[in-house]
Each structure stands twice: as C-alpha cells, then as structure tokens.
Length: 163
Image 1 (cartoon, rainbow, N blue to C red):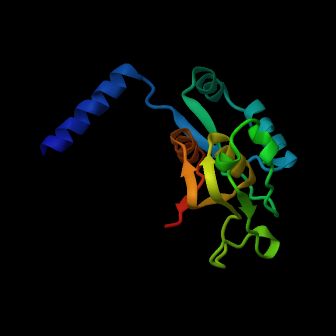
Image 2: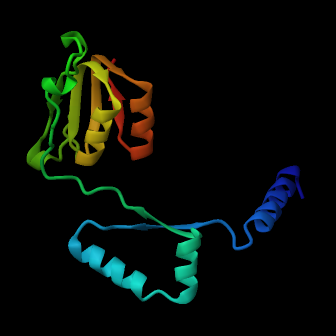
C-alpha cells in the first residue's frame, strides 16, 4: 500500500468517525416548468421516513440544474443604472444574437453572447448574464472586477477576454 493509499484510508476513517452516515448526497434537479416542480414536490411528499430524515439533517441536498437559456438575450442594464459613475467607467454592452439568439460570435452553436467593449464589469453584470444564460466576451477596454470573477465561477458564466 502506498503512502497515498494510506492517507486516503485515514481520511475515510476520519470522515466515518465525524459523519457517521457519510458525506451529504447532492442530487441535481431540473425545475424548468411548473410540471417539473409539481412532480418534484409530489416525490418529496411521498418520500419514506429515512429520506425525510436525511433531508431534515442535511445529508440529502438538491442543486438546480443549469438554467434554461432564453430564446433571445435580455440586456437589462442601462447607463442610468450606474448612477453617478463617470461615463468613462460605464460598460458598453451589446448583445450579439444569431439565429434565434443561440449563435455565438464565431457562428458556432452555444449560449447567447453579451459583449462588453469597455468599462468595469461588475458582479451585477455577471449575475444578469447568468440569469439570461449568456456568456461574456470582454473587449480590450473592459476590466473584470475580482468579485465579478468570483460570481462568474460560482454561477458558471463563461468569460472570454479579447486580446
């Protein structure tokens, strides 16, 4: 047995001691329609006693599947949304939809693209892109804030920086 195998065995033993029932189980659910929601709720209501206990204690968790991409990009920000920010720092945002809003800049199929030419790309911009199912393409004059970068990682928004 190698040192790595021994280390893994020790970690498993510690996890068993600390978490007698093991690590939480996370199930991904797709709730994109009212019918999906109704089926999911019915499933929870019909769950056996052990599953209900696992839900109560946090040993069973749910994660939403990736959001459904809307048929057309929705750009909700306007320069007025930036209040007293100097005009030179307001991001210039352009949607670049193709056929039915699903074609990327290079013509390949993929999520709609939100193009930002210049200015600060904030967490709010990334949040809006995530809600719309878009990926971001940043022009040479655009700067991504650290908080926006963290939000993009956590919400799965792809960011491409042009050089």
